[in-house]
Amino acid sequence: IERSPTQVAAFIAEELAADAPSAIFNSCGSDVVCRLLEVSADDPRTAALADAALAGEIDALCCHKFGRLVAASILSNGLTRQRRAMLRAVGSDVQRFARHRYAAGVVAAALLHCTRDEAAWLAAE
Image (cartoon, rainbow, N blue to C red):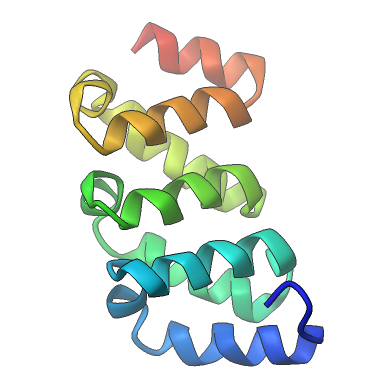
């Protein structure tokens, strides 16, 4: 994906968006989604894939063995609106997420990649 032309990466994102949950909650699929977000997060088709991931239960995304990787990648590479949606979801029950085996990494990614004001808000929750 990193060496593929942008059009090929966008095509992959478009195909995965059709059935986002099966890609996101899969070991290989989650890696592909993460690489797409790293390489072409601002492409409309990759953004649609990330939006499809956020359209489901964000709690489930954060607490899943492979979904957490996509959640962390959205926090580090996603569009501003996608990062804010993730941050709101994490902030809704930050104590539970911080103690969860997989979601704790998402909380760490949120603190690492958000602004100081957002980090202060998250820490206060």
